[in-house]
Figure 1 (cartoon, rainbow over the protein chains, first blue to last red):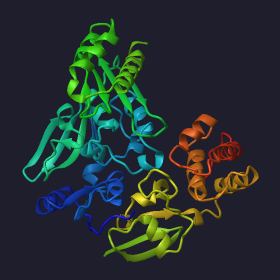
Figure 2 (figure 1 turned 90 degrees about the horizontal axis):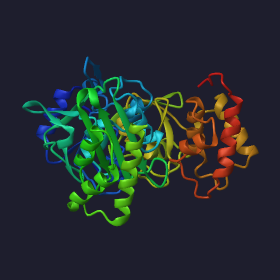
Figure 3 (figure 1 turned 45 degrees about the horizontal axis):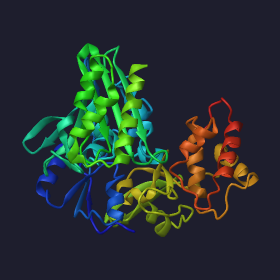
Figure 4 (figure 1 turned 135 degrees about the vertical axis):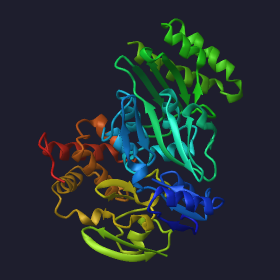
Length: 274
Length: 160
């Protein structure tokens, strides 16, 4: 189908975008790559009154590489991450993830900030950035605030982003030289949304170990017990995953999903242990 | 209405468009460039793929209003392109199209794979084509044609 009637504006600065959003907060939506929003509009499940095009705002397209973190602007595309056009804080994890995300034509336009803002439960970035312990920087009328990625996504398509806020960037701590990662996405076809998604990051030098599941019937699911066991040297991780999944009863995994998540988590951890 | 100025297949174009108009409908209905096809209109089938600033994009998931200052290249705009010529010849020789509906976008996607050196094996080509659906299911010949075209460009940089 075709998108419903809508107004369109392309502000010239982030400050202008924030002001416009404050003025039209009830009917406006930000559009960056539009790779989910326009599909939703074409399907008539979204019908904003005003689209504020932030895709070319220089403030949102920049990347800062400092000593211990890389700050990636919200409108940096998946393809730029895939191709290594920007600094990689993750020792290869983020380019690897980007390459498995939808299709190249989508990756050329879709953005990391857009993926976080929508927080589709099956999306890659919320889970991956949670595993990397990233921080989401948002901008609203009263200034900036930072939220840990693990707390940013609160449920299915639900985040802590207020109606008058825009995601500005994501600050990702750098993995140290010995940092390891594992990533396993299970989907029926290359580029489809995940049926199960596991991301593992272990950085002993920073005392960081995290096993995270995506496509988990809600926000990214951190497997706390498993993460801790993995940090202490792996033993009987399968039981740990089972215990963590049992604790997440509110996710209502059926047996098939339970098996998929277990397989994804085990395979991702295997990559770290190799 | 939103005023836009852009390049389409090398020619400067200016128009006023309603914001809800997709790039695909703009190309087809206003510019009469009907080689760009529409299948699903939600980014899954790939039939509407065109180049935006040199990179493949879904024209059903872009607003014409957002294409101000951009360069668009559609299947009608590749007459002098060496990689596209090789692809067309191989699609012909290997019978890589049946109804032809997916073909323009298959060619644009395949050209991008060859230029980015992602057409070195059957596996790579099939991965790269995952976002372009052929409902005649003629993938075997499409993959063969792309593999053969890619060979012609060997290890030398294929010129865009």
